[in-house]
Each structure stands twice: as structure tokens, then as C-alpha cells.
Length: 125
Image (cartoon, rainbow, N blue to C red; front, side, top):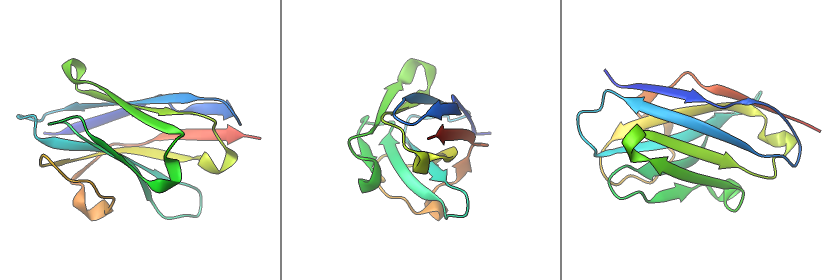
């Protein structure tokens, strides 16, 4: 059974930084995609990034390019999402998601089979 455990959320002042973690377990192979979505209060889910476990390539949503950065520790099956220069509008629940496959770079929620519980990021002004 595939499980995703996200952590690292919290309350941060605007302009600060935060690093989220997502640890995947249960995959029997290395061909999968790990992504991050977020859902702000009253808004729809928004894809943030997706990373191929196969080649490490990360695709970012235009709205976060330059402020968000993904890194990976394959030995720990963990993907990190570094969020810099946080803004109040970044307040959201951040979800770690996954799907099988080597190369998929998109943000259709229906394309991701596995969702973690989410971690709340609150940015105070």
C-alpha cells in the first residue's frame, strides 16, 4: 500500500521560508512521480510541482517559479519543497501526491492516484 506522509507546515511571517517534506512508502519500483498541490481557503486545488523519481526532473507551476524549489533524497524516498519569500496568499493546505509512471509533468488532480493528508501552511502579514 502506497502511503505519503507530508510534514513541515506551520505558521510563518510573510517574507519567511518553510521547508515541507514528503516521504513515500509502499512503492515497489522507482518509476513514479511525486507532486505537491495546495488548496487555499475558498479556492480550488492548485498544482505546485511534480518530480520524476526516475530522473529527478521537476516541473513547476508558473505561479511558484522562482520562490519554490524541490529537492530529493532518494535514499529516504523523500521529496522536499522549499518555499521562500512567503506571502499571505500562500496560506493553504499543502498536499503531497503521487502517481506511477516515469514522465508526467502536469497538474490534473485526477492523474494522481495517491494523496497524503496535507500539511497546513499559514503565512501571517
